[in-house]
Image (cartoon, rainbow, N blue to C red; front, side):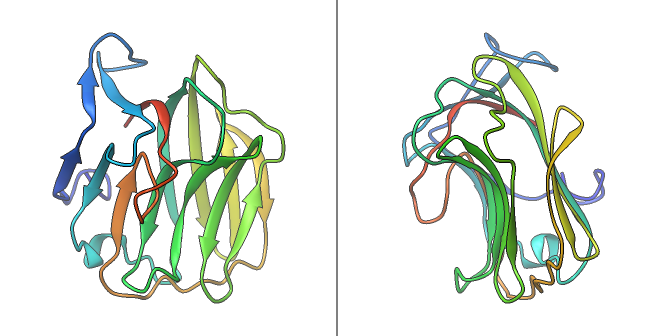
Length: 174
């Protein structure tokens, strides 16, 4: 749900199995194999994901079973594919990114968010500052982020990038 449960978004499940064998809370999680076909996504949810220049937080629990390659945890992307924001892991670095005019990236360097253990990951935009957190600890910060997420047709992808690549390998919850 979006905005503390006030509005539900329609989610399409393409290949993600929900399992009870791996969970941090709630007795289950989504099992992502890294395949391009494994994704939870929304349709054209412009009103829910169009952040304009507003403050926002994206957060989830992740349990990575592989740290190789580039793996997207989540991405929200507009129609033109030139304005997006999200969290991903690449080249031994956890990255929190906003792209578009005035965009930027807060890079957590060599902070590994935890292979074979649950970690809470959060990305926060507050004014023109973008911060990344792992298990409640600030690990990345970038200032002067003035991207206006103002396109139409924003869609959310959990477990991979759009287009279909950079799949996440492991479990995601919340």
